[in-house]
Length: 185
Image (tube, rainbow, N blue to C red):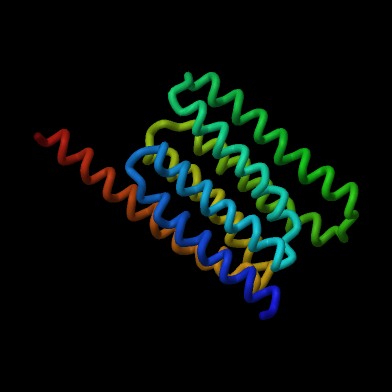
């Protein structure tokens, strides 16, 4: 089986976990499912050649673990975690660029998911699930662009981001409707 096809299958599995994650009603469940999705996406990039995706997803695994542990911590603590993880994402980008020395076009493409990572990480600072999903949408757009550039090996990631965005919009609508019904009662 061709490496790109293995990457595609793994990214599709990751996609399924992430789609389910964004329908979770509790942040803890969302983070657990997102951790599983992140693992599959990270390994899919090993097979599809998305080097920056591998390293960022490794940081994202730590992000999920840290935010799971800090779930009941203060907003200040969660913002400190955001700073640490944002720094780690930037450090990965800088180190990767310095070591691999990719052409300028690749540097620019690799910067897109890093920028998205700042938003995706900041999303986990929020405890309000609507705000979390709204901020996470920016992260999805960046990965949509990056996966589109990587190609067939990241097809699951590309389709996954389209479906993640639809899932988040659906979950936001559901939660807003439930909140309006609770207020009406």
